Length: 244
Ligand code: SAH
Image (cartoon, rainbow, N blue to C red; front, side, top):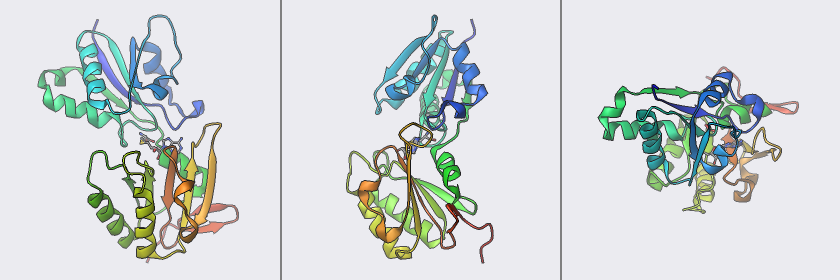
């Protein structure tokens, strides 16, 4: 048997947002690996071995997926959202740098709907003009770099999608990010808190930056900070396509 590894995005949670390509890869898989809550989203069936693991074990998981593929298995590593957005695909390529013989394996990255897009679609089109995405977790980078990127993104007037707003290792980080943004752009910006989008626990709040509070976000929340032109139209929020 020729082995393979797919790194697949399961989307933000709702079954309707799992792509047919990802469903097909899961239907053919012999092994599914990933952070336990994501693996729990994959249906159990005969011939499929599930390998749930802890959040922080990305490199070991990547190594295990590559090893299984090298042994002839059809392995799928699952991420939530898109596997290339703050997720497992980069970890697999890091491992490939370390173990060059695995570079010859059949490896595919299967895209998924990332949280930022699902959240944006719920409220309208807040990413309709230039935007950027910043991971607020400081597990893999210094907090000073996060602050620098926030400052420069605000200066460039990007809409900003914030992933991992509440870092377990630095619970005060999000509050500092909000203070920094208020200082940079004032309190009138529209801020969207999108919690558990497309799941039964979905909750969306749209407020102005001066009313944004740390408790409005948790680890299942995607935050979008509007740009200077982001506005409401009826019950929707959008960023106009033109800027001067
Ligand atoms: N690869 C994922 C992101 C992983 S980082 C993707 O592409 O979406 C984990 C962060 O993603 C969470 O802290 C949260 O900010 C965001 N996130 C993931 N699923 C979400 C959902 N259903 N609703 C809101 N935010 C979500």
